[in-house]
Amino acid sequence: MRTLSSLVPAAVEGVVRDVTLAAPAGRAGMRKIADHAGCELIEGPDVATLFRRAFESTRNPTIFAIRAGRAPEHGFADELGDMLAGGDAAAIMRENPRSLLTRLFPGMAPVAGVIARRDKLLRAPSQTFGSLARQARATQTLRARARFVE
Image 1 (tube, one colour):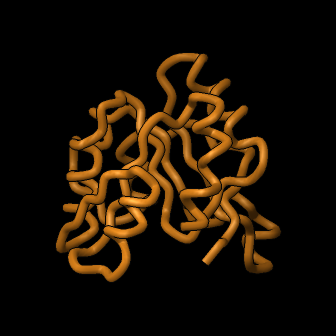
Image 2 (spheres, rainbow, N blue to C red):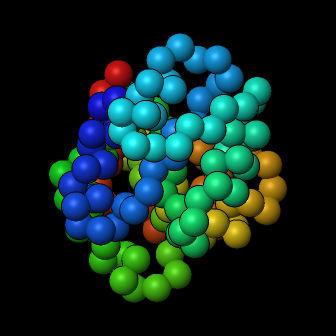
Protein backbone atom coordinates (compact mmCIF):
# COMPACT_ATOMS: atom_id res chain seq x y z
CA MET A 1 0.00 0.00 0.00
CA ARG A 2 2.87 2.39 0.78
CA THR A 3 4.34 1.82 -2.68
CA LEU A 4 1.01 2.89 -4.21
CA SER A 5 0.67 5.97 -2.03
CA SER A 6 4.18 7.10 -3.02
CA LEU A 7 3.01 7.31 -6.66
CA VAL A 8 0.27 9.87 -5.92
CA PRO A 9 2.49 12.94 -6.62
CA ALA A 10 3.43 11.47 -10.01
CA ALA A 11 -0.27 10.87 -10.75
CA VAL A 12 -1.09 14.48 -9.80
CA GLU A 13 1.66 15.66 -12.18
CA GLY A 14 0.17 13.45 -14.90
CA VAL A 15 3.25 11.31 -15.46
CA VAL A 16 1.65 8.18 -13.97
CA ARG A 17 -1.75 7.59 -15.52
CA ASP A 18 -2.84 4.12 -14.54
CA VAL A 19 -1.57 1.53 -12.10
CA THR A 20 -1.67 -2.24 -12.27
CA LEU A 21 -0.77 -4.45 -9.31
CA ALA A 22 0.85 -7.80 -10.07
CA ALA A 23 0.85 -10.49 -7.39
CA PRO A 24 1.09 -14.26 -7.06
CA ALA A 25 -2.28 -15.96 -7.41
CA GLY A 26 -4.24 -16.10 -4.17
CA ARG A 27 -2.12 -13.60 -2.24
CA ALA A 28 -4.30 -12.47 0.63
CA GLY A 29 -5.57 -8.91 0.62
CA MET A 30 -4.37 -7.88 -2.85
CA ARG A 31 -7.86 -7.75 -4.36
CA LYS A 32 -9.00 -5.43 -1.57
CA ILE A 33 -5.97 -3.14 -2.02
CA ALA A 34 -6.52 -2.97 -5.79
CA ASP A 35 -10.22 -2.20 -5.33
CA HIS A 36 -9.55 0.57 -2.82
CA ALA A 37 -6.83 2.12 -4.98
CA GLY A 38 -8.84 1.85 -8.20
CA CYS A 39 -6.21 -0.38 -9.77
CA GLU A 40 -6.32 -3.48 -11.88
CA LEU A 41 -4.99 -6.66 -10.26
CA ILE A 42 -3.05 -9.18 -12.34
CA GLU A 43 -2.40 -12.58 -10.78
CA GLY A 44 -0.16 -15.34 -12.06
CA PRO A 45 1.84 -18.38 -11.10
CA ASP A 46 5.34 -16.89 -11.61
CA VAL A 47 7.17 -13.59 -12.08
CA ALA A 48 7.59 -13.87 -15.87
CA THR A 49 3.85 -14.47 -16.29
CA LEU A 50 3.02 -11.57 -13.97
CA PHE A 51 5.27 -9.19 -15.90
CA ARG A 52 3.88 -10.29 -19.27
CA ARG A 53 0.22 -10.04 -18.20
CA ALA A 54 0.72 -6.66 -16.53
CA PHE A 55 2.55 -5.20 -19.54
CA GLU A 56 -0.05 -6.57 -21.96
CA SER A 57 -2.88 -5.02 -19.95
CA THR A 58 -1.53 -1.47 -19.93
CA ARG A 59 -2.80 1.15 -22.36
CA ASN A 60 0.32 3.30 -22.28
CA PRO A 61 3.30 2.87 -24.62
CA THR A 62 5.76 3.69 -21.80
CA ILE A 63 5.72 1.66 -18.59
CA PHE A 64 7.16 2.29 -15.14
CA ALA A 65 7.46 -0.95 -13.17
CA ILE A 66 8.53 -0.81 -9.52
CA ARG A 67 9.13 -3.56 -7.00
CA ALA A 68 6.63 -3.93 -4.20
CA GLY A 69 7.88 -2.54 -0.92
CA ARG A 70 9.82 0.25 -2.63
CA ALA A 71 8.80 3.90 -2.99
CA PRO A 72 10.33 6.55 -5.23
CA GLU A 73 12.06 9.39 -3.40
CA HIS A 74 11.06 13.03 -3.56
CA GLY A 75 11.67 14.54 -6.99
CA PHE A 76 10.81 11.38 -8.90
CA ALA A 77 7.72 12.86 -10.58
CA ASP A 78 9.65 15.86 -11.91
CA GLU A 79 12.53 13.71 -13.13
CA LEU A 80 10.19 11.24 -14.82
CA GLY A 81 8.21 14.05 -16.44
CA ASP A 82 11.38 15.62 -17.83
CA MET A 83 12.61 12.28 -19.13
CA LEU A 84 9.31 11.45 -20.85
CA ALA A 85 9.12 14.91 -22.42
CA GLY A 86 12.49 14.20 -24.02
CA GLY A 87 11.09 11.33 -26.09
CA ASP A 88 11.83 7.63 -26.19
CA ALA A 89 13.28 6.72 -22.81
CA ALA A 90 14.60 3.67 -21.05
CA ALA A 91 15.93 4.08 -17.53
CA ILE A 92 16.34 2.28 -14.26
CA MET A 93 15.74 3.32 -10.68
CA ARG A 94 18.08 1.84 -8.13
CA GLU A 95 17.39 1.06 -4.50
CA ASN A 96 18.90 3.25 -1.80
CA PRO A 97 22.29 1.82 -0.82
CA ARG A 98 21.95 -0.48 2.18
CA SER A 99 25.41 -1.97 2.52
CA LEU A 100 28.93 -0.58 2.63
CA LEU A 101 29.57 -1.90 -0.88
CA THR A 102 26.52 -0.16 -2.39
CA ARG A 103 27.33 3.02 -0.45
CA LEU A 104 30.81 3.04 -1.98
CA PHE A 105 29.56 1.94 -5.42
CA PRO A 106 25.92 3.11 -5.77
CA GLY A 107 25.74 1.67 -9.28
CA MET A 108 25.82 -1.79 -7.71
CA ALA A 109 22.57 -1.22 -5.77
CA PRO A 110 19.77 -3.53 -6.97
CA VAL A 111 17.35 -2.33 -9.62
CA ALA A 112 14.09 -1.26 -7.96
CA GLY A 113 12.29 0.05 -11.03
CA VAL A 114 12.38 0.14 -14.81
CA ILE A 115 10.98 2.70 -17.22
CA ALA A 116 10.78 1.50 -20.81
CA ARG A 117 8.67 1.17 -23.92
CA ARG A 118 6.00 -1.50 -23.60
CA ASP A 119 7.07 -3.29 -26.80
CA LYS A 120 10.65 -3.70 -25.49
CA LEU A 121 9.44 -5.16 -22.20
CA LEU A 122 7.21 -7.68 -23.98
CA ARG A 123 9.97 -9.12 -26.21
CA ALA A 124 11.24 -11.87 -23.91
CA PRO A 125 10.23 -13.35 -20.56
CA SER A 126 11.90 -11.74 -17.54
CA GLN A 127 12.18 -13.02 -14.00
CA THR A 128 13.83 -9.99 -12.34
CA PHE A 129 13.94 -6.22 -12.55
CA GLY A 130 17.58 -6.53 -13.58
CA SER A 131 16.63 -8.67 -16.57
CA LEU A 132 13.87 -6.18 -17.47
CA ALA A 133 16.46 -3.39 -17.48
CA ARG A 134 18.77 -5.39 -19.77
CA GLN A 135 15.89 -6.28 -22.07
CA ALA A 136 14.79 -2.64 -22.29
CA ARG A 137 18.40 -1.56 -22.92
CA ALA A 138 18.09 1.10 -20.25
CA THR A 139 20.78 3.70 -20.84
CA GLN A 140 19.94 6.07 -17.99
CA THR A 141 19.82 5.76 -14.23
CA LEU A 142 17.43 8.08 -12.46
CA ARG A 143 18.85 10.36 -9.77
CA ALA A 144 15.79 9.58 -7.64
CA ARG A 145 16.23 6.32 -5.75
CA ALA A 146 13.70 3.94 -4.28
CA ARG A 147 13.54 3.65 -0.51
CA PHE A 148 12.30 0.60 1.37
CA VAL A 149 8.79 0.95 2.77
CA GLU A 150 8.02 -2.65 3.81
